[in-house]
Amino acid sequence: MLIHPLVVHFPIALWLASTFFDVLDRRHADPMFRRMAYWLVGLGLIGAAVSIALGWTDLFAQEAQGVGTALLVKHGYHSWAAYAATTTYLANFIWRWRTDNTAADWILPLSLLGAVLIALTGWLGGDLRSVM
Image 1 (cartoon, rainbow, N blue to C red):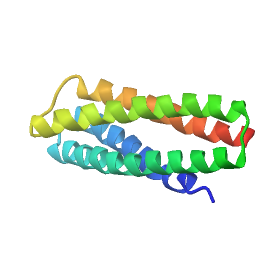
Image 2: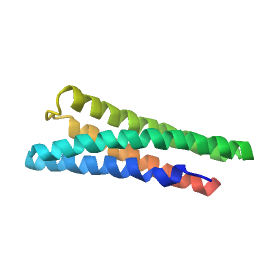
Image 3: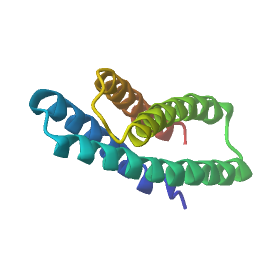
Image 4: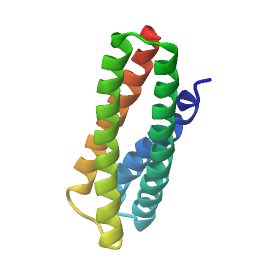
């Protein structure tokens, strides 16, 4: 049974929502928006750790059943996009944590980059279903 597809929606939704709150913070300068983004990024990191672990578990189970190289190649692209998104949001979270979540000019571009990467990751993950 594939569990990974059931949990990936959490980090995707949490991180996209955090980017939305970063946009709101830029427009309205309300510290509540920055706090929401901070917590959503952190919760998304927890969800990403679970998603990545279950993704590897599911891949190993698929490999044990015998899979073609198309799945492995597509999984590679999907994995690297996921690692890039997770690293981007980890940098985002560490910055916020170390600076007591103070406003920074580059946090919104970093959030937007993370949103693009996580959207790409989700699209590549959905595309994996075509070779399963």
